[in-house]
Image (tube, rainbow, N blue to C red; front, side):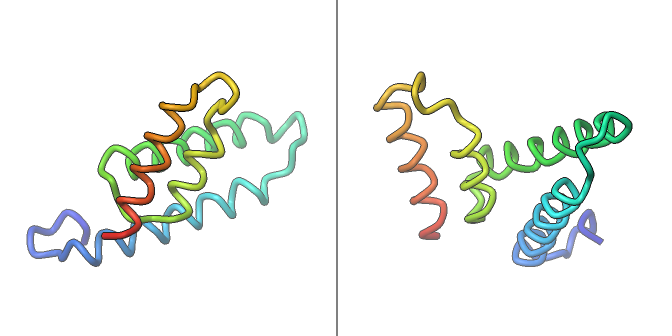
Length: 95
């Protein structure tokens, strides 16, 4: 459905947001046991890829930007880089 040429951008954004939230809930539900760690790492990687796409495409998804900013090493990032990330998030959310 999302690859259909007449699918609206609004629908794509809505579906992407639902997938992000579903993936985050799934990651939280996976136990941190030794047996489940490979699955947890895989789902975490998939979640990171979704977040990276949100940032790359400047999508207005508050959770995606929150996860992105929380995942950065703010102590070593430098003030100007952190401010730049925050500004990008605010611009995307105001669209």
